[in-house]
Amino acid sequence: MATAHHDVPEPDALTRPYWEAAAQGRLLVRRCGACGRAHHYPREFCPHCWSEEVTWEEAAGRATLYTWSTVHHNDLPPFTGRTPYTAAVVDLAEGPRMMTEVVGCEAADLVAGMALRVAFRDGTPVFEPAGPAG
Ligand SMILES: [Zn+2]
Image (cartoon, rainbow, N blue to C red; front, top):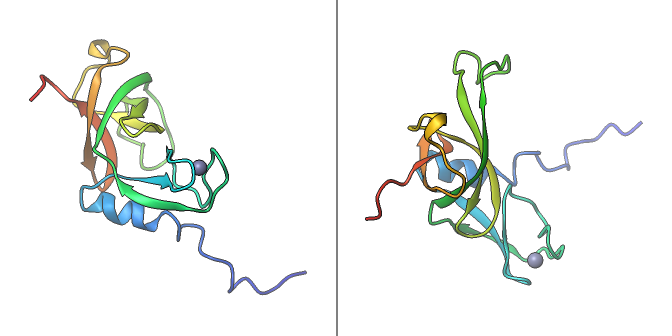
């Protein structure tokens, strides 16, 4: 049995910058220096070409709505007591597809492809309708 785990990186060490930035109201994505594509959720390797040449980049915070569903029951914290909410998958302007939550809009008013912008709630990136251009 292996007993020493002290040399194993913390599981969240990779994503810590992401959450620290989110706490400051900034959305980060990972950009691959080899193939130029961005990805989300943060990984150590580019999921497109497996290069390790990935760096942090601040996202513009713009996205379009890909799909969504209204969640009425969720017993897992921190969702308890927050239902119903709109779980959504959005396409970031940088390219990556991201699982998130849409706020500030009735589910009935959501339209596939609608423009969204990032908002932050309790240090977690969520998205809201971008509204009229400008
Ligand atoms: Zn790549």
